[in-house]
Length: 209
Image (cartoon, rainbow, N blue to C red; front, side, top):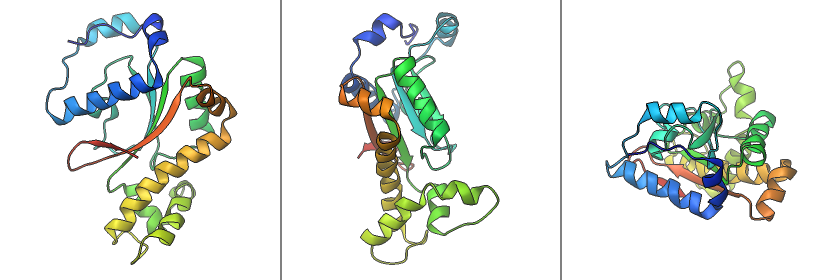
């Protein structure tokens, strides 16, 4: 049973690779139906005065991808930043910098997912209120996929959508490195690792890119 929260001492012993392995093992527990039992009351009591998460996950808002659940993580284990289409902006970058540089997290996981509605909307050029500006963040991935995939460049083409989901994760990682000197230096120094993956709605598995 998970009943002991991560302490600063434990966090200091972690490495980016060990944290990634831990998250992937958690996902394996989830997909096999063996998620760990948790004592939430104990974890709440232990984290009231502080938190020392091992990772931060940049995820889509999709209700079918409850991040802590699919990675089998508990209270105090991970930060989660969510925005439709799992892209970065100034606020997200600040959140990632806080997670790693201030709070000590060792890993950034950019997590896209199969059949992402925001990605499909970007593929179709949807224009609606503030959604229009939001989707502009995903358009670089749409344009990249149009150069790589044959057939229609819209949401009716499942291969095009799948490639755009992957490209969106990869380009988001590139922009995180380009636009955050803090995170780039931490990664260069081996203090953190920035990785990407795609969650399968069909299997519940996180496939690393």
